Image (cartoon, rainbow, N blue to C red; front, side):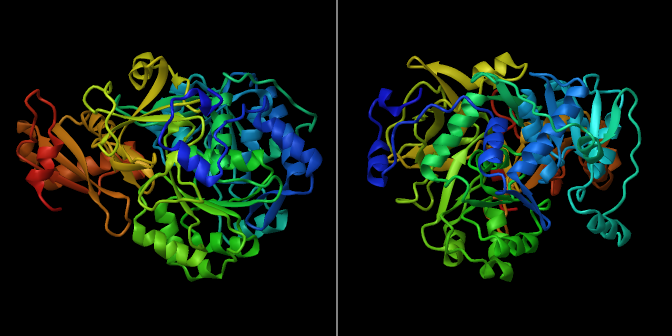
Length: 575
C-alpha cells in the first residue's frame, strides 16, 4: 500500500489537509543504508556524520571505515543473508557496523547490553548470529559465558568505548584509569578479534550488495506472551517506508540537520532514529551513556540540535539539568517522544525551555518498524499520540474478539495495516499468525494496546496490556519473568504487576508476588526473597528485576485457573 487513496475515508484525513501533510506515501527508493551513506560520501564527503566524545567522523570517513569492516566480515565468512549481532552502546562502532552489514546484504540483530548471558544465548541461537560485535566489558560479562552454547557463532569482534579517539586521548584515559582495561577470555570455537585493529588493517575497496524490498534487514527482539523474546523480521520496504512516514511529520533537510538522541541503537526506536539520520545525511550526536545528560548538554551546546528524540524520563532528566537551559534551541524543529506516556505537566516544563508546540508524542512498536502514529507539528494534541502516519490504516477493535470495530470514543484494541508492518516473528509461525491477521482483505497487526480514537482521528492510549510494564522506557513482559521464576523449585506461583512511579512518570515500579510451595515455607520469606533476587539478577536484564518481592498465602485465580492480576491489585491495595 503506497498511497492512502485506496483507503476508505478516515477521520484523520482532514487533519492531513489542515496541516499540509501530503496524504500520499511515495514508494521508497530501491537503496540500502549503505547506498545512502555512499551517496553522501560523494556529495557531502566533509559533512559530519558522527560527533562522539570530541571526535568528528565525516560521511567520507564513515563510508571508508564501513568498507574496511565489510571486507573483514566477508573474510570471516559473512555473506548476504547472514546475521551479524551488534552488542554495543551508542558508539561510532555501532553505526559503522550497521553500514558495513548493509554493504554485505547481511541482517543486523541488535543485542541489548542489558541482557544476561542466558538471554543472549537465546537471541544468538534464535537469530543464528554468525559474528557478534561487542564492547570489551560486555564481552567479559555476557558473551564469554556463552561459550559452548552458541553453535552458530563463529567470531566475536571486540572493541573498547574509546577506540575511535586519537591515540593520546586513549593513552590518557587508560593511564588515568578513566576507562578500565579488560582481559578477554577466549571462547573455544569462536575467533576473538580486536574490532578497530582488524578494521583498520582491512582494505577500503568498495563492497556492495543488492538488497530486495522484501529482504529482512533487521531482526529486532521484543518480549511477549510466549515467555521468551521474539525476533521481529523487519524488511527493507518496512523500514524505509516507515522512514518516509516519519519524515512527513518531522521533515529533515538533507545534509543540514543535527540529531540529538539518547535512544539506544539496539532498541528499535534508536535504530530508526539513527537510520533516518544516515539516510538524510544528518549529523548524529552520539553519547554512550544516556544517563550522562551533562555530556549530552555540553555536546548540544557545541552543536545545537534541529531534532531531538528521547524518552520522557530522559527529557525529565534534561529539564532538571542546568546545562540544558544553555543550549541554543532557536533552530530546533521538533522534539519527538515515545516509548512511554509523557505527562502534560512535564511537556509544559520541557517546552518552556525548547519552545512551545515542539514536543511531538508518537506511538509505535518493534513490529511496525516502529512508527504507527504521530502528532502533527501544526496541530499537536497533548495527551494524545497523534494520528496514523500516512499510508497506515488504524482501527480500534473490540478487545474480546478483535473482529468488531468500536465506535469513535470507545476503547478497544489498536490494529494497524501498512507497509511498515513486519514480515513476521522469526521461527514462530503460530505467534506470527496470532499477531498478523486478515480483516477486510488486508493483513493487520494486532498490537494488544487499548486506546480510543476521536472524531478527528487522534488516538489516546487508555491502557497498556496488563501483562506489560515500562521501566526506563524498556518493556517488561510479566509472563517472561514469571516463566523464568518457574525454574525455581520452591516457587509455586508468581505474578508480576506494576506500580506507577511518581518520580518517573510513565514508568512502573516492578512488584513481584510469590506463592511458595508448601514444602518450601519453612525456609522463611527472608531467605526465599534473597534467593529469588539473586536468581533474577543472574538471569535477567537489570530493568526486569523486581524492585519489591511480596509473599502471599495464595495468588488469586480466575474461574478458568488463570492468575487474576486484577484481583491481586485490589487485594494488595495501595503499594
